Image (tube, rainbow, N blue to C red; front, side, top):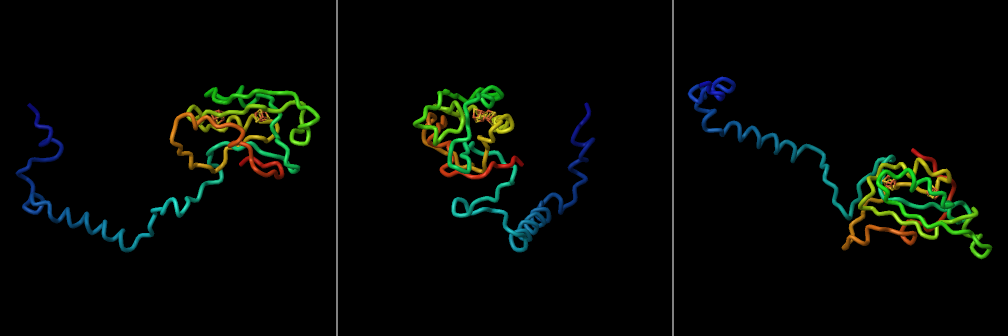
Length: 170
Ligand code: SF4
Ligand code: SF4
């Protein structure tokens, strides 16, 4: 029978005394550790006091945007919900009445806009499909909550507090 250890690694008998006591290898490893401790730049982030620098193309939690006049950009066209591969967007559209026209530029608006963050795979398709530049996956990554229900977020969480110019996709 072939002794695999002997064939590929050599016999134990061929190990020198130093190999057998392992100490040189241990000290060599500890020297590498010590060298990194003393001379390498730390890569640890002191979270949460210190926040990570996020890449410009990072896809975190969604935000529903407002325009320059503070109106909601979303016109409830359902493109995002249609394209979503995880079927995690739920929209209920409603006609815009004169009383709420100041907040909604289109004929329709999303009365309900919910995203199930547990189902979402953060692919960014909704952002790509939106013809109004109304939905973006931004650098929000602090998503911890204390119950599963809270992962279904609605307009109270999603809609941006203030408006601004049309955001360019990166
Ligand atoms: S990021 Fe992808 S999975 Fe998540 S809501 Fe948008 S389209 Fe759906
Ligand atoms: S977020 Fe954009 S794609 Fe989705 S319903 Fe609103 S306007 Fe349409």
